[in-house]
Amino acid sequence: MTERGGGLADAFRSGGRRGSSGGEGGAVRGEAVRAARGSVRRRNRKKVGKRSDPRYGQAPAYVLKSVFERTKEAMANREIRVELEEDLRERGVEFKEGKPDFGALVEMLLLDWLEEAADEAGGR
Image (cartoon, rainbow, N blue to C red; front, side, top):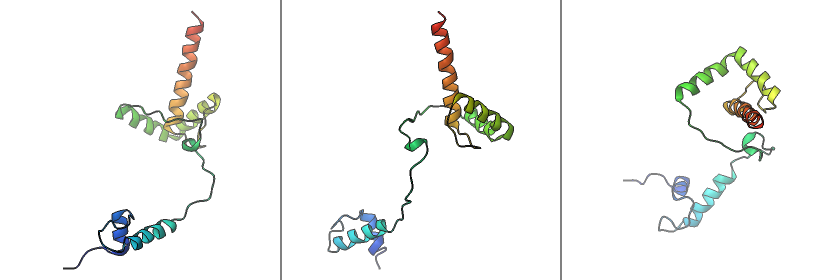
């Protein structure tokens, strides 16, 4: 019976650790992993987007699936999306032109809520 894998497959399986197979050749496997990782081409460009922007943080929330699905459907409607984009611009919420995302909508709704809360607190 022949052994499956070998060479590069073994290197990936062992995570490139030297001597992880118990026999000789651990150094060779480590070199194979480094060579494979080195061949991955990375883009040499500036990171963009909210994920890379230190002003933004992730705010996970549970939303009913039915509400989320209805929201996605509404945002797919061109007329609604155009109106949403206008509202986002008015409130200064950043979004990708022509493709506002769920996070931009949530941010706008939170800003509206905060404004209402401030008005109520100031009016007492």
